[in-house]
Length: 137
Image (cartoon, rainbow, N blue to C red; front, side, top):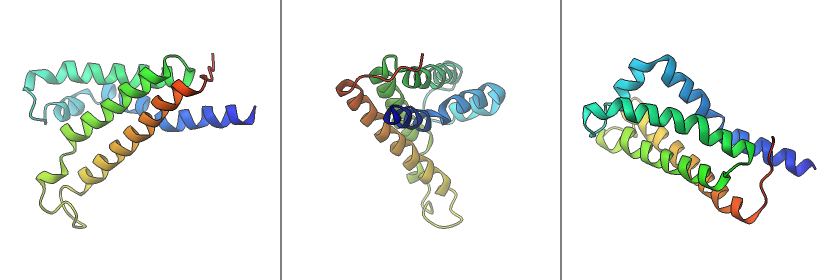
């Protein structure tokens, strides 16, 4: 039984940031829309991308924590992390990204954090198929 508790805590820890990010996008819609429009994608794509990200950031973590379609939810979130890292944290555009006061430094760390999360979510997606889910509900 203690391992089940550890597994649930691990799942919550892995995805806790996503619902807060979704709420932040809702509360600060204009700032989130400005960021969504900052990639190379057409400007009109911002609102649908933002709505889609809010849905993903709310539903996928709930599925992972509840143990419902964990593999699919984890793989969707892993892809979401990788895509957002490449689209919105392109640290390589800033030649001084490694310097202490470099403009791209924050993007470098956000890029790496996104790929770290993607790796953990991929691992969960793989393991979810090998071990039974631990449903909370």
